[in-house]
Length: 307
Image 1 (cartoon, rainbow, N blue to C red):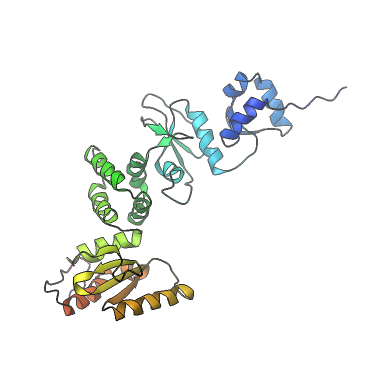
Image 2 (cartoon, helix red, strand yellow; image 1 turned 45 degrees about the horizontal axis):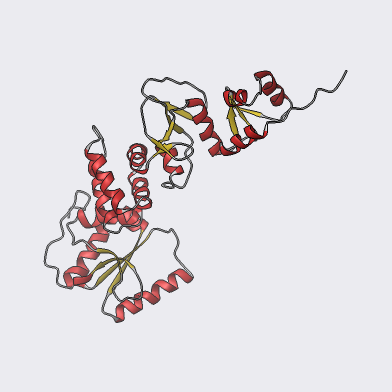
């Protein structure tokens, strides 16, 4: 009895699969002359792996391979959206476990696995096809925390994009986080570069009716600071890192000294201070502002202690 020969992928199919994170569909294989029987034989001898029903992989594993598998399962109109699109577009760092796949308003697809096939239309761009930045933010933000949204917006920061986002909000019906996004857009468009800076603007400044600091200012021409109350000689630095020591802390101290010699007082606040006690942070900022001539009273917010 002779040895059954091993099959190999045609060069064209192999090239196509490499463009699709190592996966291809049964239909694509048929176009290159491979039958379903041959594909089954290749799976049996470990030349291929089954990524999903009707989808084959040259090598298993990987989040991007799951994305492409969803694209091939979803058909020609599929567009990746939500958090998966946010990751593909560089708006969030971590790939999400569930991959949203918009397949069109008239299609219904059910497949076990990490995919959520959504009956809705979306316009796509890129490879694999994913929603554009503005639509991605609107879709992804529905399932994100406030801080996650703020971090995403700072990554998407661009003056034209901000205007597009605001315009899209006006035409999006029944959007539950409209006011939150409006406020965050304002912070990001005026220079906020982190979720912590957005929180400071919302929970410290606006909540207590403090003056609005100038973000990313350079009061001495030597170093940029997170925020500056120029009329009152106050610098605010916000540090979102859990630990801040060694060379970084030494550099901060040196900048603070330069600013002090130039007549600026520096207040530094950590993530823990701003998130856990924004009212205490506001009181400290207000005290320095009032000492420097700010005459308006600080407003008590709903979180401020009553005594």
